[in-house]
Length: 304
Image 1 (tube, rainbow, N blue to C red):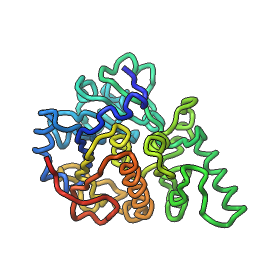
Image 2: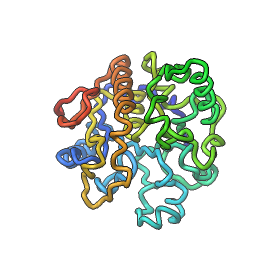
Image 3: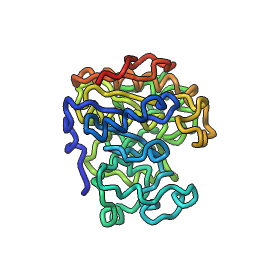
Image 4: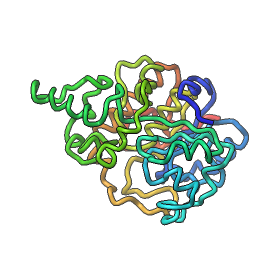
C-alpha cells in the first residue's frame, strides 16, 4: 500500500530509533541492533544495500539513488542482475520502503501492482515544487544581482549554494547534489502539492532552515526519524569518509571516495540543521561513532 508522509508524522513518538549507515564504525553494533530490532525494542532505518550487513530487513528501507531500482529488483533485470543483488529482498512484508521517485525511475503503475510491502515515494530535490532548472535560474538571478551566495529562497539555506558544491557536478546541473537526472527527467516526476522531505522536516520541527538536497542518504534517514518522532535517534556507521571503506570489507568502495572532503561544509551544515530540528521536535540524536571527524551531532553510547 502506498503511504503519504503525513502517515509517518510522530508515528513512533518516543520509541528508540537506529539510523544505520554502512561505515566501519557500524561493526560493533550489528548483532545488538539485530537483536533489539527482533525484540521490537527499536525501529531500524537503513539505506541502500542493507542485505550486505544484516540477515533481516530494516523496519524502514530508505533508497535515494537510481542504482537500487525497485522495478529492476522486481523483474530481476538491470543493475540488480548485473550486480547480483538478491531479487527477493524488495518484497519482504515486514518492512516499509521509502524511496525517492525523483531518482528511481521505476514505473509507478508497475510498483503499485507488484510491490508487496508498504511504500512511500518522496522528493528530496524540487523545493517549493520547482524544477531543478528553475531553482538554478533563481540562484543565478540572485548571484548576478547581488554578487554573493547569500541565497535564502529555498529553506533559508545559503550553504548548499556555495562553492565548491555549486561547481562540483554533483547535482542540480553542477553542484547541489541531487539533480537533474537524465537532463531533467527527475523534474517530470514531481507531484503537484507534494512537499519535499526537507520541507516536511522543517514544518514538523518549526526550524527556520531546512537541510540541502543531501550528500549522503543517511541524512534522509535522520530526517524521517525526526518526522516519526523516534527518541532517542541513535546513528551508527555514519563515518562520512569513504576512504575508510565499509563495515563489510567485501563491499567495493566507490570511486568518488573523497566527496566527503569536497562537501564537508555542506555536510556539517546539514547535520547542524537536522540536530537543531530534532531538538526543536523534542527528540535527541546520539552519534555512536565517537571518532567521527564532524562534531555537529552529540557523541555518546547506547543506553538501553
